[in-house]
Length: 310
Ligand code: CDT
Image (cartoon, rainbow, N blue to C red; front, side, top):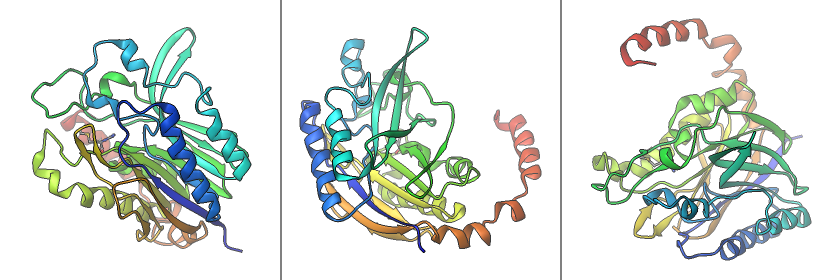
């Protein structure tokens, strides 16, 4: 019996800074309803899916920054997402800005949650690779202040869910091979990734024309080299004067894109993902137990550490 998970990559078009949570959540609910009508089990939303991508601004007023964060999940405004998921028997991945108070100390993370078909949270992930910079850099056309507004998460985890083993990552994480490998070493068969990627990269504008190529390159390689499904979902289009790539897609363990969005707006790309397709990759070319050489990687990393400060 194949282990089929019907998945919708739920791309979002731009979210204006003035858009309220209620307005954004109405768009997410429309995606949930449409995906459920097409018999989906799981809907994957982008990174920071409840607001505009606020790290593009240098904001000096912490209260203004904190207005983009969720203090509880579900909270008063997001609760309807969870209730709808339970009613429709559809799970979701949601990226959002998390403000957590732990032992009396405030922490801010770029987070995602995985919610089951019963509307309950299965797991939470806090973004490990925070790109950009931490100080105001006025020469840029727009800022990328993730290092200012968030602290890095501690680890990559996986969760037993949807009949398989599911991992989560967020945006810049997808560019690092370790992201996929650390989860695949824990058995990941399905890796969910939301992203916000500007077309223009201020420190390296020579990469701009390759932004979509690199987006697909890293996720397709991550899928193939780890024998895992990968679902990458964008917040796309012209958001507050910043053009963001789309290209949301579902990638099979072969590395092939099997479903993709074609617009830069709110759009679903849907695929029936058979988790058993992972098996032939995990058991042959990428049989980690038989073919990996971890002792040599450790030596190489130690030597490289001397040179590049790992
Ligand atoms: N959100 C996010 O992580 N975006 C980055 C943009 C590049 S940062 C200089 C990304 O890797 O897509």
